[in-house]
Length: 235
Image 1 (cartoon, one colour):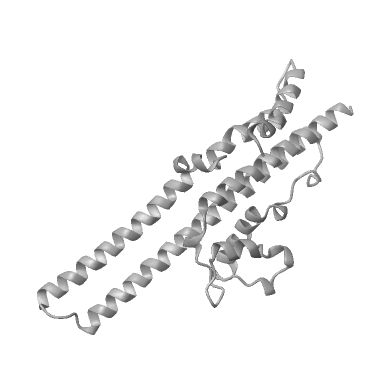
Image 2: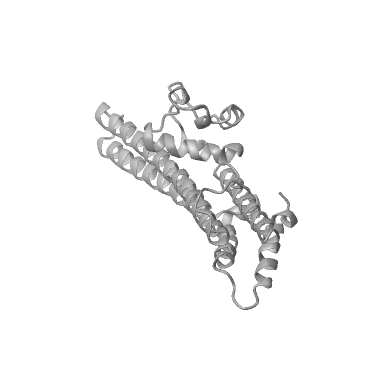
């Protein structure tokens, strides 16, 4: 979606607010707050990603892994220097086990990052539905709300979140409903599964995920603004 298209709903909301000269309605305040915070949560473009919270999170994960690996090498070399001989099996096994633990922790941290991304999506949807209820007075879920399942990358974030929480980081689509499966084209491109369908979260293109989330949230905002405009026009 282009920047001009993305601002269409925002313009609608501003226009509707302008009609309320005595008092800005609560739904408009809520909706504008969602629009204002969207770019802070999910960058709109890939070039905006380096300054995002997610990029900082990635850097800290990667730096943590480097620091741990550096410490393992330091201890390993110190042992060799003391002995002056090839390392015996115990220190070699220790180094290998420690390195595997470091890799496991890095993967878990990337998984936690994905969980946090989906948590932001859920929070955003909750806020938007609340704004809709303020505007329309309807208590039921909005029929206008775009479904994440129709956005393959965003839907993948949801599934990856559930896999980490419920199946110990394994992708088991046969045990789930069809709408809980990740698009095969994405799986092929990302190459995140091993032979046992264990997910390597470190291979995920986090930048691609969060930019897709921005597009989805922007579409949700525009859908709500259009829905409200339609309701107001019919009054």
